Length: 232
Ligand code: CTP
Ligand code: MG
Image 1 (cartoon, rainbow, N blue to C red):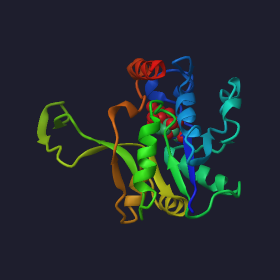
Image 2 (image 1 turned 45 degrees about the horizontal axis):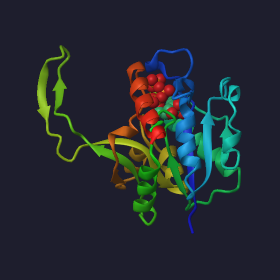
Image 3 (image 1 turned 120 degrees about the vertical axis):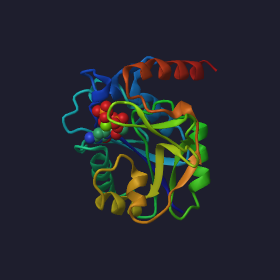
Image 4 (image 1 turned 30 degrees about the vertical axis):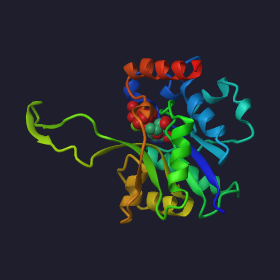
């Protein structure tokens, strides 16, 4: 039986957020942002362990008490210059823990997606557990899409048919993901690396709540979602 592991790349600086503190540590619903995704992943019974990949220069992680996750959490200080490098470094170091097999599933989840829900996570695991390739949470594009020229004038309206926005977790087997990430440069998600091998990851229908906190105004929206969920 294949096991399930989560890996959270959290070695970014959050430059688009414009705050000196990396965005994964910004306060959100009374916790550092990263706490929320960690909690959802750690409380999911299928997930055996959760690896978190920090920048080697990270001075913030140890400012907080993470003991409630001690049973599942493994901290790796091997982040790289890009998200893909952080994930790949994490995979290499995780293998040294001797608990991950080639066929085990790795669910890569952005620290900056704090509103992942347990039900979306369960859906991803259930839909892909027997899949040959793996896949990711995603949502069909809802807005009309415009392509601009250099003067921000519309050059063309693009069809949104069959277009999806990729989210995380992205779920692939250890060996396939390691091979895929070793072979690619200039990618912003794990699925693109797998696509470059000629494979077709499966899109699992998610919802807009699992958005990525990127700009300052995203924080207030994430806070609303989490507070509403916690009050239920
Ligand atoms: N990430 C990482 N290592 C990097 C860059 C990003 O582990 N060298 C992680 C981030 O910490 C985040 C996830 O990848 O959890 C998604 O990246 P993004 O939202 O782009 O975060 P940042 O790179 O930190 O933000 P920005 O691009 O605005 O600088
Ligand atoms: Mg980035």
